[in-house]
Image 1: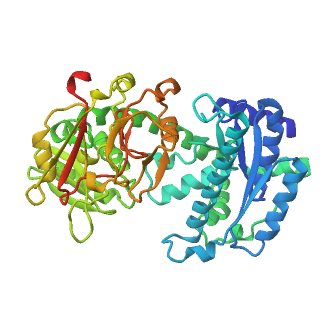
Image 2: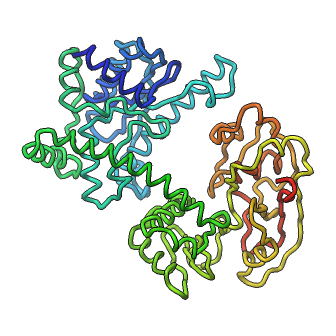
Length: 499
């Protein structure tokens, strides 16, 4: 079965573009049957697909057997001649005050460790090759996990019971971002048969037999019962998940087109155009708006969605305070989200209204216009004293034009405190990427946004010291937002003639 299974995994991997020649693949190996099979299969696939392979193991410090599992994985990797990174964590110690369950925190830290390993591998590859352009045409750095068809069926059932919609019922995808799942089409019994024929041992996690856990109960009680009704129940559930994935991809494209029809400014939607859309698409537009929020829409549920739709359809409109310091409003024919500080209800100093904090996502802005002449920018600074709570309205009246919106900054709130200038990129450039003030190198942002390499040095943008404030058509940083407490405005825009 070894060669036959390898051929099937190879075909699945190539069909879903999971691994290409020259890729760097990091296998997540816990020591259980699934991950041992994954590592063995990937080792075999190297001969066919010519990629680099390493492994990573995270000892969560939860079970007393975790040290045994760690030693097993290290020994297995030595035998297979696969370099292995090992992380020792203490999840029980970190659990207090995390606001997460033990399982949630373990997963979060586990994937953080995976990312650390990939970053280290990238840096190592940069040094060896002398190439600082990871991304683009370079090798991909991937994390391989051992999810299989039974995991898919369990996930779909679990989400069904919890009331998930179409995207949730689509279950696990073969690839998400840089995470790949080469065994997703295999059933658990096929994995066990492969290990037996290859003479490969594995570790047993005794907690997997605990049926007080919801997922374990589905695995040990519901799935066997379903197979008594239909022998291929697991396959049928997984097949339905694939259909729902395709359905969601189609609906997402249709929904995005509808969203564009209704959006009249970055984050601002026309009520009449919105109500002209099909009721299903109305919900999809709202869901996309919610996913675009800095909070990602955490804790915003279907009951909130229903209330938003009621406000939009009502003649008087209104506002709705949502989890995460977010406020939805439908007034005077405009639909939008704002943010406030809990208790004060004032716009947050770090999460301003969309018209002020708007990330410029207009990909139609030609990159080359920024590469020749810094005078394409117009910078205006002025003192202001707006009426209480009227800053956003005041700016909107001053700047009614549509198209690429100017960006507004509070020069007193910029993180560096240095004067703003227009320039090309320089070593050490970064952008503030979230309200916590975390930084990301400009190089990584340009790679993520797929800016062609030959265009990167031609970009001209406003910066304060090493902090890049805004790259039109690409991204705006997350510092210097205006609030009702701002007393100076720095307006930066592109003259309309240049667009």
